[in-house]
Amino acid sequence: MGLTVDDQLAIQQLAARYSHAIDSGDGAAYADTFVADGVLDAGALQVEGSRALEQFAGEFANSVRAPRHVATNLVIDGAGDQATMKAYVQLFAMIGDPPRHQVTASGTYLDTLSKADGSWRFIRRTFHPDG
Image 1 (cartoon, rainbow, N blue to C red):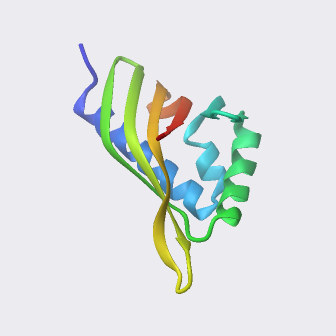
Image 2: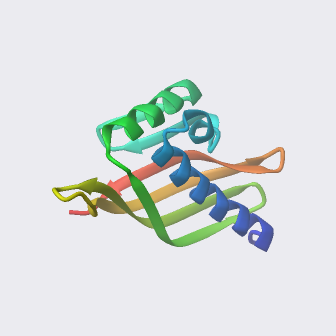
């Protein structure tokens, strides 16, 4: 049996909380979207564990002007307490003079997730850039 509708919605909310947390630099909320030893894999950038994830989110938000992660076309599969998700992602940032939001990166997320104590979390979130 596949995932329930409630699980599908909870995973969609997790993806939204992830984007809001990293864009605002809320390191604690960002780290909370992952399991304790969760991994963000962005090729040369590997961030593992709650403390490192929390620090990364704060640094990221300070390195990009008004970042906005937009994840779309979420495809969620799984059963029980395990799931996978794939999505397209675009990163907008404020650039130029006059400043305006522009896409500065795009690609796909490939994720593995687990549910513990009633909450879904990323085990591993892998970003593959376009091109």
